[in-house]
Amino acid sequence: MDSLGNIVFKDREIENERLELTDTKANYILGPSLTMRNCTLVLKVSARRLSLKLPRFIDCTFEVKQELKNYQSWVAASLKGCRFKGRLSGCDFGYWPEYMDLPWYQHGSIEDCDFTEARLAGCRFHACDINTLRFPKWPCFTFLDPIGRAPELRSVKWPGSFGDIVVDNLHTHPPSTKALTYYAPSAAERFETTPEELRAVIEKFDCIFY
Image 1 (spheres, helix red, strand yellow):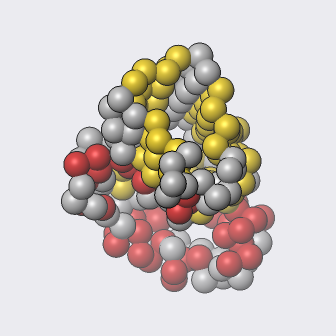
Image 2 (tube, one colour; image 1 turned 45 degrees about the vertical axis):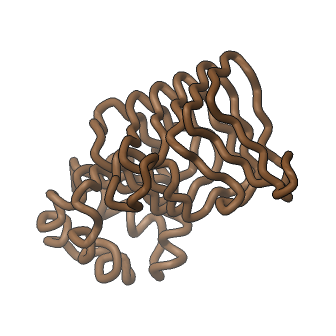
């Protein structure tokens, strides 16, 4: 750790290692020019303590031990063949260069990644082939092509305020949005309904994975 509290990993390749990013007083900076293969990264820090500057993660496992909230910087990483475990909310993945005009945000990507052991709430996937991704099953549910299917999704009555707040505004997400995942219990609490009532409507659509 340097005098500013930064722990920096850059300009190297790391293979078959386990990195624990758990010091709550440190700022972890991954990249630029960092490639990690077959590594396990244990994350137990808040979003503001983790900076990604176009690292490449290949066949890595992310164990999120503390819920990672409102973290858009995954779009500044290249993710291939990775597995995610733990709770993530308000996170963005993939290629979304409009998010921030910095070099490392212009080349993000995601493919062949597995989220089946993760709990995703309000997470988006940008400009990627969603057929290469594995999304978590119920009680998570994922809108596939949410912008393109928005008219169809608006055609039915959704319970609570979920329709008015979420479904009626799907078209307002960035055009790059290819998938959008929610966690039914937290969505139900926030939008004044129940997981069961949500599922009754979800089951009517082939563009929702659950």
